[in-house]
Length: 194
Ligand SMILES: [Ca+2]
Ligand SMILES: [Ca+2]
Image (cartoon, rainbow, N blue to C red; front, side, top):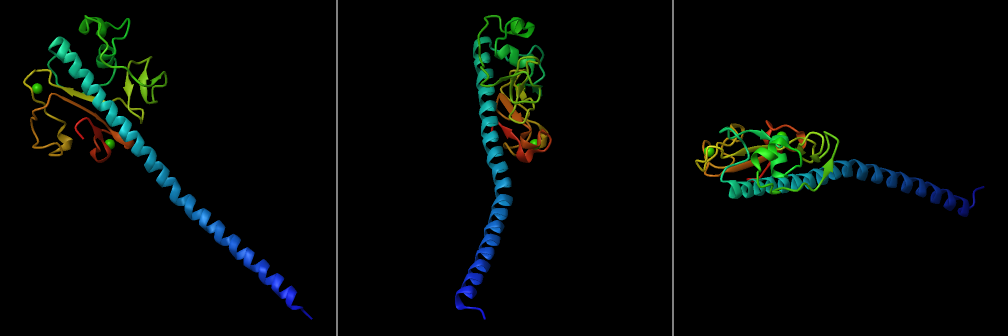
C-alpha cells in the first residue's frame, strides 16, 4: 500500500520534470529570438560605422578641395569612383603612391583610417590594395563635382530618395552597399546624405 509520503514524492518528481521541460523550452525560444536580434544589433552598429566613414570621406574630400580648388581626380568624370588607391592614397597621403605625388603635391593628410588590414575582404584600409573597405568588406563608392558646376547627379537607382531626381546642388556623395554588399539594392544602403 502506498503511503501519502510516497505519493507526494512522486508528485514532486513529476513536477520537477515539467519544470525542466518548461525551462528547456524557454531557453530554446530565447536562443531562436536572440540570434536574429544579435544580427540586427551588429548590422545596426556596422551601419553607424559605415555612415561615419562616408561622412569622414566627404569631409576629407572637402578638405582636399579647399586646399587645391579641385577634387582628387584628373578627369571630369563625377563618378562612381571606388574608395581604392586612385582616391584614398591621395587623401591619406600614402608614401610612394604615384597618385598622391601627382595630385597631393603639398603632401597634406586629409584622411586617417581607423582600421588597417591586409585582408582584402575585411573592413578598413587595406595596405596591399590601397582600398578602404566598408564594415562588410566592400569599397565605398564616391561621386564628386569634378566639373565644378556645384551640382551632382546621384545614382539613378535612388530615384527621389534625396530630393528631386536629376542634378542636386551638392558636391560630394559617398555610399556603401550595406549589409547585402550590393550597391544596386538601395534599401539597406548607407550614404553621406542619410
Ligand atoms: Ca557637377
Ligand atoms: Ca544594398
